Length: 142
Image (cartoon, rainbow, N blue to C red; front, side, top):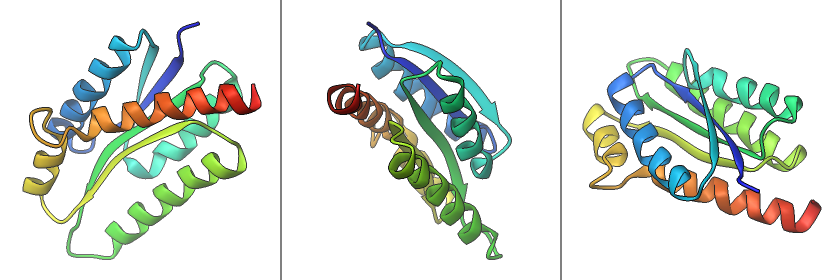
């Protein structure tokens, strides 16, 4: 059966998230996954959406895609740390299959290099990770 994957994506930096999404969708479509894309306001909201999706029982796994660029305040640290912690809690405590594709960078140039499908293609990497974790989850816990 085709894996059912939620792509939870922050559009705060739309030009970056669009590229992450394109890289992820190439991988998911090649794998025959059934994909649902849902947008959230920012990276901070991604764990909440993935938790709701897990509760729905409609998905085998999820991708967290977005970008947080360091600014002049400590807001960056809270958003990065809490979104990562929220996702790790879902992975460890609730055994969710999640691919992590939230870029946490110093500047836009770093983000663009990591999102670009011809360079680092972090969206594709996150999709591969999600599919691998779905496979392990099915093998180990059904």
